Length: 416
Image 1 (spheres, rainbow, N blue to C red):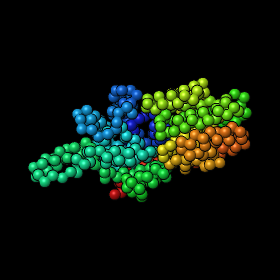
Image 2 (image 1 turned 30 degrees about the vertical axis):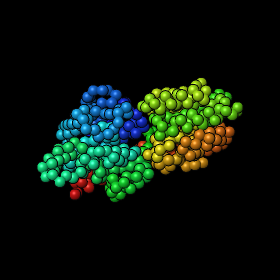
Image 3 (image 1 turned 90 degrees about the vertical axis):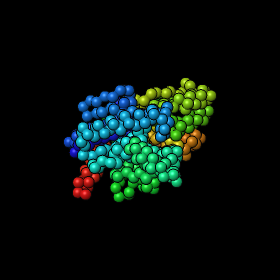
Image 4 (image 1 turned 120 degrees about the horizontal axis):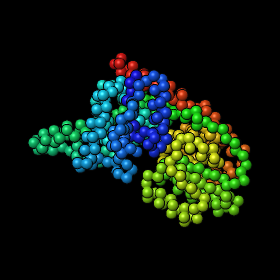
C-alpha cells in the first residue's frame, strides 16, 4: 500500500519521543513491504528539501510564536504555501491512504485539504493536539465573525462569497470529526470521544512499543558515590521540572542525603521557564548538584538511563502516554512518577514505580528517600518495570497492529 505520512517534525530534527515513534512506525511499515512517504516541515533545515521518500516542505511555527488564527497577509501566505505543498505532494504520489501523526503548528488549512480527499485518512493520536486546535478555533474571533448574521442582503451575499473563499483555507473546526484514528492510550481515546471528535467505532487503542535496542540489562549495585536522579523530557512548566528541583532541595537539607545529584535532559523551548529554573537552583544553592543537558539521541539517552539510579517523571498536566517511562523501565531504572492521564495505564504503584501527587515536592522527596534506603524495593521496581516493558510495550506488536488497522480501513473504503 502506498501511504503518505504527515508529521510536523521528523528525525533527526525533533523535540520529543513521539517524533521518534513516528520514524519507528514508518521504518516498520516499510520493512513490511509498504511504500511509505513522509511530508514534514523544514524545522531543523530551514529550507525545502526533497530526498528519496522524505519531503521537508512545510513551514513550521516555532514555540516563540502563538499558534492562532490571524487576519494578516503573513498568516495567509504561510497557509497558502503549506496548502500548495500538500496538494502538490498528493498529486505527485497518489497515495492510497494518508496517515497523519501531527499537524500542530503547521497550518490551519491542512485538515480541510484532507477532508476533501476520496482516499482514507487515518490519524495517529498521541496527544491532545487536535482538541487544542478545536478549542483555539472556538475561542478565536474567527468563529464569531464566520457565524455572525446580517440583515443587509448585499452584505450577506458578499459575506457568503468571502466565507466560501476563506473556508478553502480555514475549515470549520467547530464541527470537525476525525474519520479514523488509533490512540496511544485509553485516556486519549476517551478525551476525543467525549469531545465528539471521533465516533467510537472508527477508532482503536494501540499502545506504542519501544525498539529492542532500548531493552538493556543494568546492575543495581551499592554506590559509594552520589545517588544520581534523572529527568528526561521537554523542559516546560506542565512537565513539572521545578518539582524535581524543589524535592532535591528538601532531600539535600537532610545530612544523610547530601550526596544526591540531578540531571535534566531535554529541549528547553521556553526561555522564561528555563530562566526561572536556573534562578530556583541558584536560590537553593544547588548549582553543584544539577546538570542540564540538551536533547540526546535515543542511543545516548539509553546510556544515561543505565548510568542513573532513579527516573523522576513529575508531570503536572494530563500526560497523553509516557514513552520515557517505558524506555527507563526497559533499562531497569526505578521510576518515581505522577500518574496523570495515559501514564496511569503504564504505572502500577509498588510494582513498577512509586507515585506522588503533582507538584508535591515533599512527597517526591519522601519517595526518593524510600528508594535510596530500601535496596529490595529498588530491585522489585526494576524487575517489575522490565517486565512491563518486555511483556506489554513491544514495537513489533505495535507495528503489526497498526498495519492491520490501516489495511482494514483501506479495505473498508474500497468496499464502501
